[in-house]
Length: 290
Length: 325
Image 1 (cartoon, rainbow over the protein chains, first blue to last red):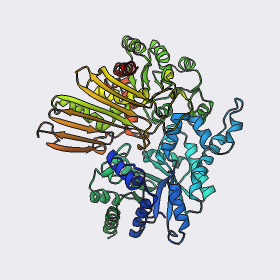
Image 2: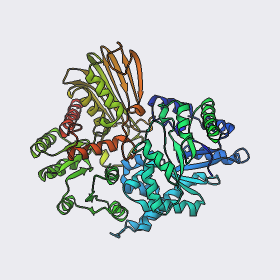
Image 3: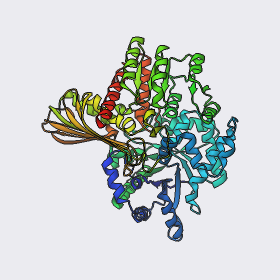
Image 4: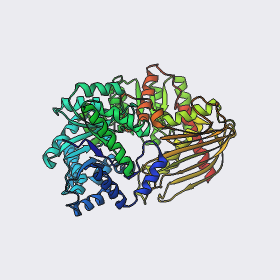
């Protein structure tokens, strides 16, 4: 079971979907690792113990701090989301796809592959995927990571390319190697669920934008609502505030009243905002129970 | 961009992808194995065997002219990546050929499909800003932040450099929103880390409607997480500052623009985004592909990002280059 509320990392890495100015302010605020740790501690103090974060270079230090304080963070859990896409996107611009894979896949794996005109086999691609997952997971050594996510850039790219097998292989690999459940972040939740179910994955963890405004919900709210009502999945709602377009109270009420949403993911910079969003979620959850 | 266009096309139920051409064996083997795409390494062979209605061209810019000309002679609808051509002479020929062949033609300047920039154009056209007297077009990002190894992007003859890459987006947005660049008053092309190409472009531009403004673009700015484009437009009755996420509009008078009040107005991309059926890293990428497919199907006019409009951008790039010498 995932926690009802998950804490996100966008604010730490200057990701702000509604304002470039705010992202710069955040970039300045979270310049020091200690500022990130303080905000994580704020989130813990209100009762949020799961941090869902991208495999950004700065998470290396955050993991180090967590490892060095085992008692303090004994109940703390991280859900890694990989890859940090901009790292690869910038590399692809510079080195091309093959060059990027050569740079990031560790070891001498490619030496044999690029010799001669031998066809690439399915196991070759899956080995590349596995090596990339391992490289991204290195920073989380000895940290509790029960769910490991594939970022939407990759999930959705593979979805459009119909490389369903790679998505399924990711699921099985993280289970086998890390004893973790795979999660998928996507902007196309209904389509992804079809693909995962066809691949034999029951009740998958899917994190997608779910908000009253219909923002980043491909096909619109109604399609998503229908899936949540009638299908089997462990949904995580992200971008519930639609980047601030909806009043937080209305935004959270909408998401809390939808069926089948196991967790709500949000990020915030101040303790006040963390508390108020957390409290809204519990308020509406309790109303629905009553 | 090619792989991302392919993914968007692969998810579009109205499109059948009949062939894919790439020079990389690794990419082709992947696409044919998993996506069951019919892959080729020679594009002429692909065209002969698959007989498509339309073609997406996402190859290094130096190949655009010859490939697009070939496609036009075969009377195929074309979506080409930006920039359009390496010289305005080549582009002029292709614009004329596309017109005489009567094919749908589009270039991948995706900013035109971002809600905030679309709204900027609408406001400018409404006249609510009064007489426009100045603009600033800016774009910054972290593409080249250390000395580079050589790739086609570092070779000016192949379409590399910040002017053709980053700056073309901003110039295109200015051309389309205000008026095409007609002369260049001064330009600096600056190399910061690159040896053969510029990493920054600073230029003073005049448009065909005599409005003057500033272009400031730098792809070696690591204080940005990704490419960030901002356009500022000042008029006698108001001012706009917009990037891809946030639109700020200042109006002197109330009532000049429905939905806006006097003083500052702020709108976010969430208010200005139309939903798409498949989303890969942003609605604008699907938006431009869907628009092209709909134009081919005769459902929308072929008026956004035409070869002609992309040619104006090529022309401006040429003017900036010659002015900087």
